Amino acid sequence: MKMLQGKLTYANVISTLCLFLLLGGGAAFAATQLPKNSVGSKQLKKSSVTAAKIKNGAVTQAKIAMSAQNALKGGTGPVGPQGARGPQGPTGPSGIAGVQAVDGPGKSMLAGTANDIFASCPNGEHLIGGGYRDENQTAASIDVLINSPDPNSPTTTWFVRIHNTSAETIPATAVAICAVTG
Image (cartoon, rainbow, N blue to C red):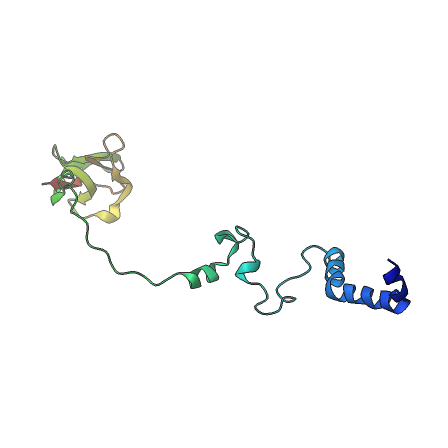
């Protein structure tokens, strides 16, 4: 201590304190005085953050931008060999083998009346559409009120309700368009 006492001057103490603050104390002071998250990429020098300075597990895939993740991916690899053929599946239902128009029983519609006419597909066939035929071709004298599948049997029967607005009797027939399965 006696050795130091002779050399301990004001100038020596100040210069040692300044050297301490310059080399280490300033960074320690800045670290305690800067607000949290105030240093970002703009404040960092290029290449100042290296892999050795990053704590293990601190950077996860979720924290890396998608564009950077895509840049790190390698190219597409070669196509692998084709796998073995799988077992054949069960046979599906047979499809439509054809279509046929089936007329319902014709009906004479009295002047000024509304009448219902029907046409049905044969057993095993399914209704896919329908309509009606005006036997006298007097379409201007009738109002079609309903022209659709029959609500009571929508997969097999076509239903038409026609109002005869003419002064004469008109014969009409409902037509079912049926799918023939094969």
